Image 1 (cartoon, rainbow, N blue to C red):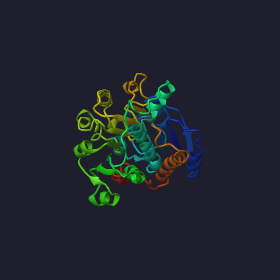
Image 2 (image 1 turned 90 degrees about the vertical axis):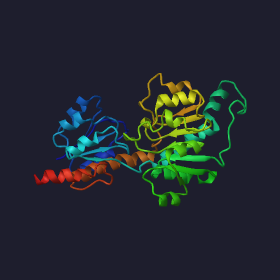
Image 3 (image 1 turned 30 degrees about the vertical axis):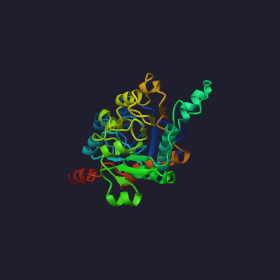
Image 4 (image 1 turned 180 degrees about the horizontal axis):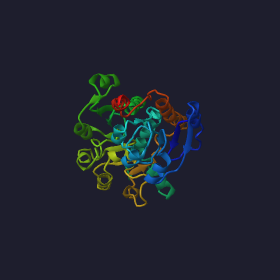
Length: 329
């Protein structure tokens, strides 16, 4: 019987995962691990691991005795040492497209909250103020330029959902082809051009060593003083300290942040001091429908590998060669 473990519980029910694992003759164990040692104690003899937020470090991976697959609840795998897993012949799977519409809609909600100043108005009205926006002017949306850093599945949905607002759209994505951009109706540009031209910038890129702090002091300095920044991807894409300074000093107008460099943020999170920031708690992906898709898909990815197959989405496809080499030896 194969053993599958979930390292960090966080959902109301795990019946979906249990059903999938038991369908291949496996057993599922769920824990709330806190430390590397907790993960090692749980997963040392496991055949498959499903992880949410717990770091799966090289030390954890080195301690695994027979693990064949690590699946993450979500798209990003920055909490998994993919290189270490690949070296050990362990498939790393993720779940894509489970919350594409939700993230796109949340990005738009944060953007509109910043454009229309809804959160700050709510606070002021509750405090007894009534100035009909005169203290904080609002600009018309039509005719503005939207810049997307990344036009993958989520970025494309943002464009689609905003079509009726008569925006010009420019995108930076080194992996996008001119044909794909034309089909989407967006103009491709380098990052500096996008930042200098855009009234609204939304970030839809994965967190990699190359993209960490892609929005930092130098890039923020290229944005318009009236610009709005929205990030629903990964907190590490934006340099928090640099963003705080830009917002406080009026270098950009406002920001909507669903993701943060430290999650949950510290009690003295600098952006909490600012009225021109709207924050949410990494909730962009969430809907009742998306959470069911997410849970089942992660379990199906593990079951696929343990049944001799291949998951729908594999982060390290080069692991096939490692596995084949081990089999030959």
